[in-house]
Length: 401
Ligand code: ADP
Ligand code: MG
Image (cartoon, rainbow, N blue to C red; front, side, top):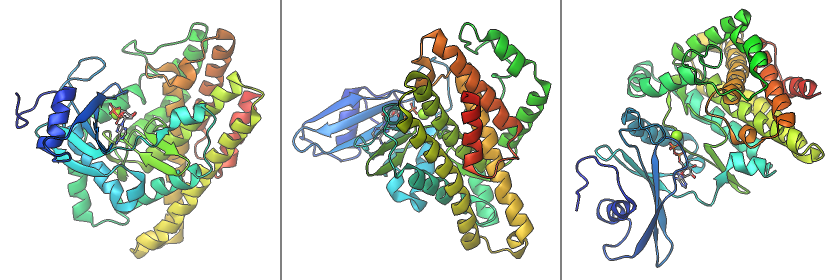
C-alpha cells in the first residue's frame, strides 16, 4: 500500500484511507464510501462519506497533468487555491467551504462538503434565480477584494502576498484563452458554430479598434496587481441554494484587477438570460428576474465597495474625493470590459458554457451567438460609459430586439 508522503494521484480507495489515516476525519475502522465527483477539466474531487452517520468531506487533488488534455500544469495551483479559500474565509466565512487541511506533498485540499448547494449555472438554467443572489454575490465581491489592495493592506505584507500568489501558468491560460485567441485565432482553437464564421471574422478578427481595447484589458490583467482575485468566478464556481451561496475553486487566484472577478460573474449571468430568451421566449418571469439580479449585482457591488472604501482606506491622499471617485469608477469600467471579454470567449472559444452548447438548433443558436458577440464587443468598447446596471441590461434588451 502506498504511503501519503510522496505525491501520486489517489484512487477512491486511497482517498478513503487518506481521510482516516492522515486527516483522522473517520475512525480507523469506520466504514466509508467514496466517489470521484469532479466535473471540471482540471482536477480530481473525492467525496468520502461515513456509512454509519453520513458525515462527509471533500478531498480535491491536483495532478501533475491536466485532467482534460493530459498536458502538464503547475501543481502549485493547489497551494494557491487553499490559501485563497483561507483568505476569503477571513472576510466571508459563510460563503466558502472551510479548508480542514492542505497537504503540500499530495497537492490535496481537504474541505467541507457543500453538496447541499447546487451549481449556480445549472440552478439559473432551471429558472432558480434565488432572491438572495445579488446581496450575497455583491457581498462576496465587495468584502473579499478591497482589504487586500494597497489602499487597505500593509504595503510590505501586500508585496509578499503578491509574490505568494504569483500564478504564471494559470494566468497564462486566461491571457491566451480569454484575452487573445477569441480575437486572434493563432492556435486555431476557436470553435465557431457553422454559419457564424463571417460574422466572427468581421466583428472579432478584423476589427482593429476592438483589438486596441482588448489589448488594454489584456495588459491591465497582467500589470495591475490591485487585489487578490478569485480568478475564475463564473457561475459554475458558485454554488447556491435557497439559503445562500458557496464559492469554490479559486485555483486561478492572483493579484489582478478587481473588475476581472466582477465582470466574470456579471458576464456569466447573461448566458443564462440568453438561454432563457432564446429557448423559452414566453417565460418572461425568469428573464426579468435575471435582469434585475444583474442590475442589483452591479449596483450593490459598486455601492458596497464605496462604503467599504470609506471604512478601510485611511491615507488622506486616497480619501480625496476625486481620487476615490475615479478609482471606484475604473473598477466598474473594468468590470464591464471583462464581462464583455468573458461573453465573447465563452461564445467563440473552446470552453463553451452549457447555456450555449445545449442550444443545437441553428435557427436559435446563430442569432443567439451573434447577439452575445454584439453585446460583448459593445461592453468592451463602451465600458467607460456605464454607471448603472440598468444601462447594461438596457443594451442587452436592445440587442435582443
Ligand atoms: P476543477 O478545479 O477541476 O474545476 P472544482 O473545484 O470546480 O474542480 O470542482 C469540481 C466539482 O466538484 C464541482 O463542480 C462540484 O460539483 C464538486 N465540488 C468541488 N468542491 C466541492 C465541495 N467543497 N463540496 C461539494 N462539492 C464540491
Ligand atoms: Mg477549476
